[in-house]
Image (cartoon, rainbow, N blue to C red):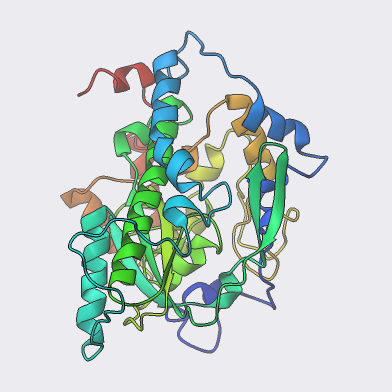
Length: 389
């Protein structure tokens, strides 16, 4: 794991232990369910089978109506999980309406790159991002091929991101804490769907802003490249046992998106705040994973199957188990987010614990036990979600 250079400044490369190839998105489990004979039944149940409401909390008609509504912007105007490159995620979209009517060909002065970078970040947070960072684009994290979901299954396509795109603006969308506490039921899925819809909304506008400065910009959701290593390189967080990005502010309770650009921005430094060492001790996400898809052991480069990426030493997820549970559960699961001790709302005691975790690992077991003792991470009643306005 440890290398002969500053491990924090290495960013996502800190997890690399061998030669890695660009990942084929066809092997991502939610794409693999469309073509691999081993998972076709799961894919049919997950994507295409009719779902009927149940008379139980989290699965009632109002819960399913909320889920579908939360995904509306993503599914109708973003479609990043369907393959990207269209609508709000279009690579070359030109607006038909402009106000004010700035003539084409205008370009911002680059004398003060730090000021421009600050303005880009301000635009991202103004549009709705909770966090934003910038990194140089490490092309190892680009997909070798993308994958489009179609009504008859799907098909791979070449990505070919032009070499002129040298930077990535990576941002995080916060998901609703109260809704996530209802995982693995409807309200939690609504928080996920809303996160994806906001991703498309923010990415599309941020790319349009950068284009308005006279530079190129490509907005992306879950398409085109792996989000988590880019977010690590951009200083947004660390990787956790749950295989998700853990951020200092929201833990894993975020969705990630990015905008690739040729605008020469000032990059951020990767960070470390004790997640790796804490996750070695804490196993709450693995213990509370319904299909037991998360690792209880140490980080390893040994993979489960083609869903995982070779050459990386992390806690690899058994994605096929995860997808199977989602299909049987009707809605997705966020137990690994709900139960994570870093998933806290702001507070003096919470901030103090994070401060200690950042500086030493000797209290990690105590903090983990206190987290359990105080009841953090326990599932809440989904019906009561609707009673709070």
